[in-house]
Amino acid sequence: MAGHFHPHHGKGEEFGPFTFLNPTSRRYPLQWKPVRANSSSDDTPHQSNDTSQSEQSTMSKKDEVRAEDVSRLYRSRDNRKGRHAIIVAPTDQKAKYLTPPSTSTVKETLRGIWRMFSTYPYWDVSYLVAVIFTLGSVVWCINAFFVWLPLQDPSTEFPGEIADAGGITAFIGATIFEIGSVLLMIEAVNENRADCFGWALEEVLEEEGLLRLKPDGCTHHHKNKKNFVGKGKAAEGKPPLDVNRTPDQPTSKSAKTWTWFPSWQELTTHYFKEIGFLACLSQMFGATIFWISGFTALPPIYNRLTTVAAQNGAYWLPQVIGGSGFIVSGTLFMLETQQKWYLPAFTVLGWHIGLWNLIGGIGFTLCGALGFGAANSGCVYQGSLATFWGSWCFLIGSAIQWFEALDKNPVAIEEGGGRVADSQPVA
Image 1 (cartoon, rainbow, N blue to C red):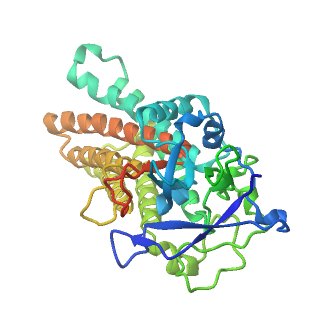
Image 2 (cartoon, rainbow, N blue to C red; image 1 turned 180 degrees about the vertical axis):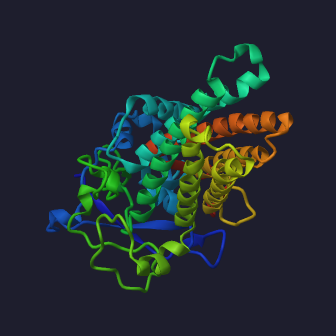
């Protein structure tokens, strides 16, 4: 007879790049107790319509992993994105669990790429952020061809290509980046402050004594398919559990389900201590300042910037300041995924997203800095080229973020057990 089980988390291992900020990841060994038969319906996990779950349900049983132990890996970035990572220690003897296979294999990666072109959860703010930044990056790549290719191969230039086509696409690209950054901030201030495990256990009828782990019971906002400003259905009527509290602190009995602007108290006591929020804030600051240069790039406006001082102040300087904001945010997004500030997290998707955005930010900043020397043809060429490769870096980072936003239940196989480390393939 199948039955659901609730997780009870003990004090887990905590990690973070800086001790003066909140931890960014925790590993919890799962402890389970069965739900009593007379428990109310609110005590049992709700069924999920998650894409990952529907795929897992069709997974061949031969792909399942017999596991000795399962741990939950909470990460602040995953929490914002509605993701639920677990670490599985496989065994050939005395297995306790049946779990889905690793999501880091070639097969699962290809499945994730296919999901990008076949799934459109427009109600999920994390998905919207990724798609909008991808679209903006595509526009910037087009813009880069307009402003760089005529310098590389003058025979390809058409009338108005650099000034008109380049200026208009710069405005469109900067505007799209600004919209994406606003949604990124909305995502950041609406992180799930409740303890969302996102998985459930049930008894395996055909194998007595084993428990099957499957995606279920998610309370993140992306579960609300009516709009992206709501909470998951399973969260209704449940008291939240602040993931930043210590085990001996009482659980809060009330929490906002959605907010547009956090209070000053929330900012000072929580968000300013979250490296992910600081990264999003830097991104929005950079995008907002950078938008000024996109606006002044419009031909009717740029043509009126007739002096060098006007061009430097209204066009090139916002690029430098805005690009610097992108550099800071990319760096912070990388650090958020690292257990130590000096240890790169090569196997974490979020780390690579931050890396490519960092490189893209360097390209955009370099373009603005070289613009101050626009009287020199070499500076003009290198500045245009910096926009070209910087745009492609942003596109790569955005595409990875798109993949990440749809991969809601990553599974890592930890051979031999032991402590979680960035060497483990926990994407």
